[in-house]
Image 1: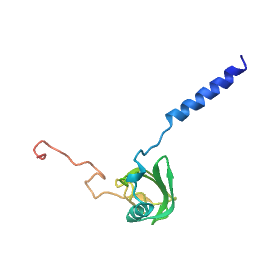
Image 2 (image 1 turned 90 degrees about the horizontal axis):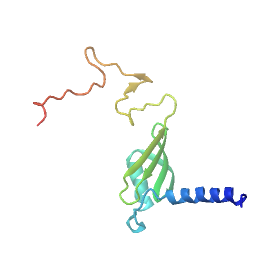
Image 3 (image 1 turned 180 degrees about the vertical axis):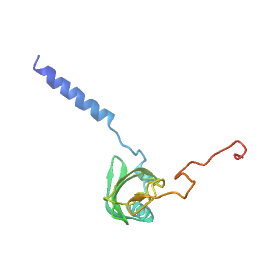
Image 4 (image 1 turned 90 degrees about the vertical axis):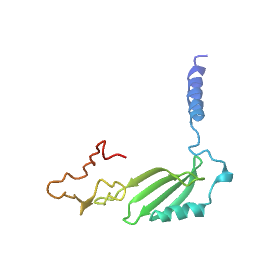
Length: 130
């Protein structure tokens, strides 16, 4: 009986993990858009598709941008909405395309004109909001 206890624990733990894991995208396949539509969506983002596959009910795309950075996308198959975006930047890459507040030239942060704070938020007063 003692020998069966570790086996029972392992079976219980592994089966509960399978019950928790589920599809990220739960749209019926009848609503899915074609692979060509997904490729066109990715191309419209100025990305070159290297690999397109289906995982957990979502389209997963590995692509590169025009700067050579590796871009991973998870896309809803029905709406083609981007659910997840991962970018692996090359060393010295310009990140401003993905992070608008991080504008720089030649690997160095841009300097603000005299008297201005770079990326300062706009001041909002009750009179300016209508």
